[in-house]
Length: 232
Image (cartoon, rainbow, N blue to C red):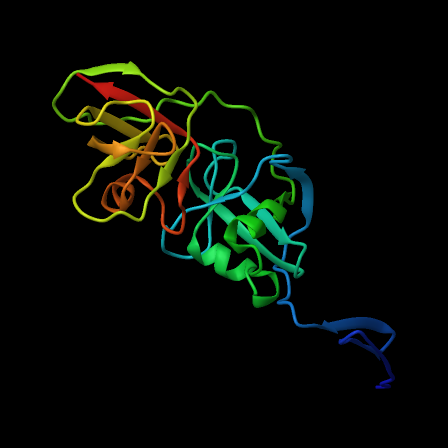
């Protein structure tokens, strides 16, 4: 049996090629983890930002376009990290990754700009011969409403911000009178809460810390898809 080795070094990456009985094998090393098996196919979710959820468990993705078990390859081009994960449940978006998946794609080198900056760069591809996605009609999120008659939707399309003010759950508004009640629904996760307007704020509705914890997502300071209703 004959061995021959060729070494090529540059930019911190090396390749070792060993010829064994006429068969060639390649080994590559770098700072980024090796990608998982599977042949990446068509890129999907193009033009749609990948989102994240604080759901625990093994690395996985939620999707409104792919059936359970579909394998998707996620690539963070900023650091070269690649993982292949399965769709583990439905969601209201093309791709929502859980905590373990985000940790696998994250690195100190790409930490600048925060989680949102990393999510905007992630490339999503179908692995192997999985079928192309088919558009689906999103079902409305099932919500259990507390007592009280819901009035008209106000500030349609407005975002809901976070205030650092403490105390019991409450809100501030530039349009609704102090003392009035509003129901805020986070359309991304289905959570909702009804609070009183405590004072004047910089926009339609800004929730204090206690109220935001009831409907917001960990690490976020803004609810971009919200429904705001005036309760009568």
